[in-house]
Amino acid sequence: MDANTLWKRYTTYYCAVPELGFSLDISRMNFPDDFWQTIEAPMAKAFDAMEQLEQGAIANPDEKRMVGHYWLRAPELAPDKNLRIEIESTINKIKKFADDVHQSRVTAPDGQPFKNILMVGIGGSALGPQLVADALGCSDDPMTPFFCDNTDPDGIDRTLAQIGADLPKTLVVVTSKSGGTKETRNGMLEVANAYQQAGLSFPKYAVAITGKGSALDQLASKENWLEIFPMWDWVGGRTSELSAVGLLPACLQGLDIDGLLAGAARMDIETRKKDIGSNPAALLAAMWFYAGKGHGERDMIILPYKDRLLLLSKYLQQLIMESLGKELDLDGNVVHQGIAVYGNKGSTDQHAYVQQLRDGVNNFFVTLIQVLHDRNKTSIEVEPDVTSGDYLQGFLLGTRQALYENGRESMTIGLEELDASRLGALIALFERAVGFYATLINVNAYHQPGVEAGKKAAGIVLELQTKILAFLRSQPGIRKTAEEIAQGIGEPESIESVYLILSHLVANPDRGVTSGNEAEPGARSFGVA
Image 1 (tube, rainbow, N blue to C red):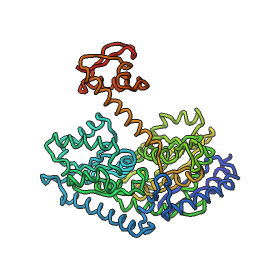
Image 2: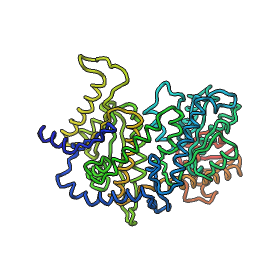
Image 3: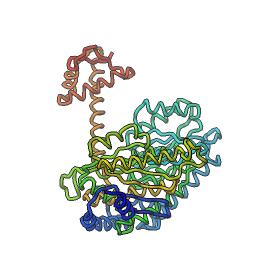
Image 4: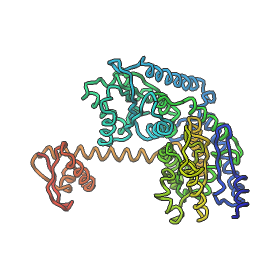
C-alpha cells in the first residue's frame, strides 16, 4: 500500500478512549474489506454472552458457578446485594489494614514497623501482583515487595536471602483460594520454617487471602494470623488481580488501588459497547480470530516498549493461554484451541528475536505497546533535539514499519502514560478480549482442566516416591536397579519414573539415597545405608 492508503487505513481503524489516554491501532493487520461482515454475527453473540456473564449467568458450567471479576471494579453491577456489600467491605478492609500497617498500628511483635511484604502464591496469585508491583513501584514506596511463587527450594532461599536481616520486619501474605495448592503450601511451610529458625512466631507475621472454610482459612483462624481476606469462588485466579489477591499487596506497597479500579471500570464501560469499531476489546478479539483463522494458527507476541511492562507478557500468557487453551469446545467436540503467547520488551528485543520476526517463519502477529510519556523529569539530549525516549519511540515505529514491509502483521496499543488507571484499563481490556474470543471459538474460558490434570499427575509421582523410599528402607545396605525397585513396589510399568525419582533423590544427599557409578541407566543401582 502507498502512504496515503496506509494513512486512510490508520484513521479508519483507529480506536481511542480519550478519557483514559488509550488508543488501539489495527491498521497493520491485513484483514480483507469483507472481514467485518463475516465477524459481525459471531461478535453479536459474544456481546450477548458477555452481557449475560455480567448479569450473573452460570458462565462456568463445569463448576456450576458465576464468573464475576467485572463486579470487582463496579460492585453496583453485582447481581446480588450481598455480593456488592462483600466487595465494598473487602476494599475498605484492605485500605484500613494497609493504613494500620503504614501507621504502625499493626506491627511486628517487638513493635518494629513492617518494611517488606513477602507474597507467597503461584499463578494468578503471583503474576498479577508481580506485574503491578513492577509497573507502578517506586523507591520511596512505604513497603518493598518480595515473591515466593514456586516450590523451587533454591528460589525460596534466594528470596529469603534478599530479605536477609529484615525478616523480622517482613509481613507475609499467603494466597491460595483452596488452601490446597501444593506449591503455595510448600512455600508457606518453607517461609514459616525460616521464621521459626530465626526465633520468630510466624503467625504473628502472617496474613491469608483464601476461600472461606478452606484449609488455609482454618489454619489462619486456628493460629490467629494477623488477618484473613476473602477469595470468592466467582473470581478465577487469572482474573483476580483486582480482588484482594492484587489489591492487598498493592495497597501495602503504597500503590494507587483506587486508580487501578477506576481505570478498569472505565475500560469496562468502553468494552460493553456493542459496536465493534468503537470497542477496543472487541477489536482485539476480532484480530485474534482473523490472524489465527479462528484456530490459533498464529502466535501472539507482546512487545511493550516500557521496562515497567516487562512482566506483561508473563501475565498475559496465563490469562490468555489458560483461558483459551482447550481440548474440547462447549459442545464436547475435540478442537484443540488456544493462542500461544510470548514476548519481552522493546527495544531490548531489537537485538534478540526481532530478526526472526522480520525474516524468519511468519507464524505470529505482534502487539506493540507504546507509552508516550517518557519519565517524570527532564530528559537530556543524547543527540541534538533527540532524547533516549525519542530513540525508544523510533525503535518501536521502525520495528512496526520493518515488520509491515516484510508482510508481518502488528497492532499497536498506545498509552499516554503508565499509571495505576492505565494499568487497570490494560488489565480490563485483555480480560474482556479473552471473554469475547472464547465465545467466537465456542470454548469455556473459565475452567482449566489441563492444570488440574498436571496436579493429579504430580500427586501420582509423589505417591510413587513414597513407595520407593519405603521399599529401600526395608532393605538397608542392598542396592537394586530401577527395574528391580519398580518390580519390588508393584509398579513394573513405571520404571522410567522410578529411575528419574531415584536420580533426584541421589542428587540431594540429605535424602539418604545413594547409587553406584554405573553409567548406563538400566545398570545403575540404588540403595540406602
